[in-house]
Amino acid sequence: MESLYLLIPLSAGLVLLILAVFGWALNRGQFEELEQEGERILQTDDPALDVDQAPPPRQPQEFQNRS
Image (tube, rainbow, N blue to C red; front, side, top):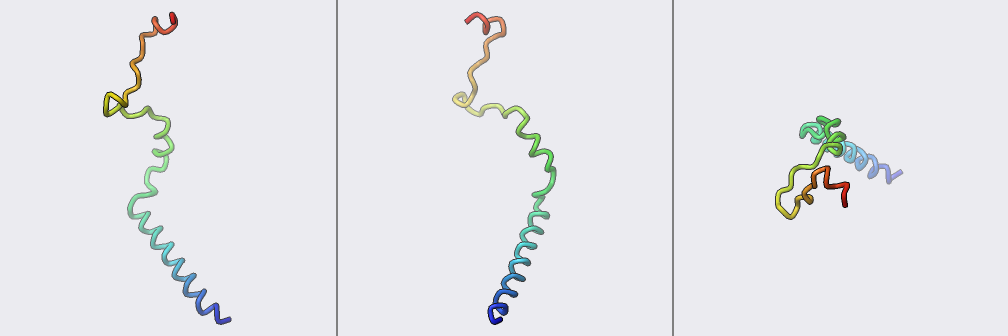
């Protein structure tokens, strides 16, 4: 019974902490445009920043089949 004097305030504090973090996330826009993040993987990559990051140049279609 004596442990309830400790567990009830701790659980109430934990609930308040969870609600505060959830409220902070809502105000910071964490749940805005959820569909955009799902579509981001389907979009093409951004252009390379450096020459080292660029993919190899593509050959014209007519030369690809001869090798």
